[in-house]
Amino acid sequence: MPTEVEISAVVCTLGHDLSLLKRVVESLARQSMPAERFEVLVVVNGPDPAAVRGVTRLLGDYRDAIPNLSLVHEPRLGVSHARSLGLSAARAEIVAYLDDDGVAEPDWLETHRNTYRRCPAVAALGGRVDLEWPTGRPSWLVPDLEVFYSRYDLGPDAQVVIGNGRSPYPIGTNMSFRKSEVPGRFSARLGHRSGSLISNEEDEMCRRLQATGGTIVYEPDAVVHHVIRSERVCRRWLVRRTFAQGRSDVISAHISGAGKTNRVYWLGRAGRAVLSAVGRGKGALIRDAWRGDGSRAFVVEAARVSRVLGRAREGLALALVGRGN
Image 1 (cartoon, helix red, strand yellow):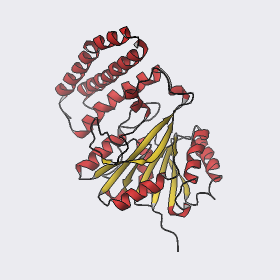
Image 2 (cartoon, helix red, strand yellow):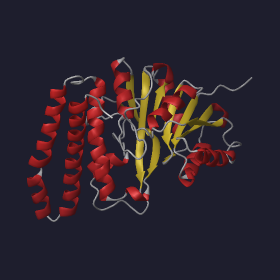
Image 3 (tube, helix red, strand yellow):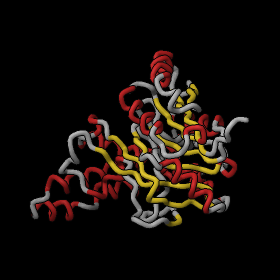
Image 4 (cartoon, rainbow, N blue to C red):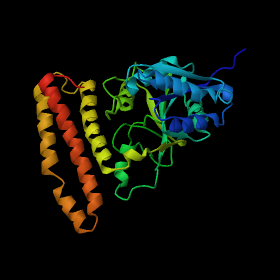
């Protein structure tokens, strides 16, 4: 009689960086749970057949260590499409997500599974995400900006997630759901795709889940290390990321129904964002520069302005055409 699969791990990848993907799969091969008790689904995202072939060859080396290892292909570009396919293909009731640049601690799957067993009311869970820098943490990066590199740490204690600034929703590279309680698919209007850094697909899903009465928790003992790609360790990438975050903020608000059909609302929101970008923060920038912290202060200000300009861009698009990207 086949052994019951208690938890499914879904890894979404474009299949272009097999060295990083190999680290992910190796971390799953070292899980403390008996291998027959979990499955691993690697979702290859995009229409490139060469990527599918490369990932297929890589997974062939791990089928003994992970008996329930399989590849699923989602040709439509977009991490939301990949996450949704992984969810529907998963055999277990508990579905955990890990990106192809994340490395799981050995007890990662067991900690996720055990939390749901202890707490039947839990519908979703987010674990701690630590950052692994290629050549050390950059000196210009202040801790508050690490969230744009997917750092997630709400402290040493487990807690219920509220979904605000002090208690944000889980990060996509270390989250799980009770499959029967997930309210539909991840929004295809959100999530990275085709070089775009639009995000918030996990936030939007968690918001819908919460609206249906689902409880989301943070578990600090479920740990993933996010491997930062070297091309992202620069100010230019951070500005791109914060601009995309501003756009993501507005698209998420539009999906949730805020001013959805009111073009005047979105035009006003765009105008307020522009005024915010040009009219605030200069005093703080000068003050920090005077104290000898100019480089850090410049990055903080650039990130803030970039984010509000992203909001202005998307608000203006909604005002002009009545829809988001």
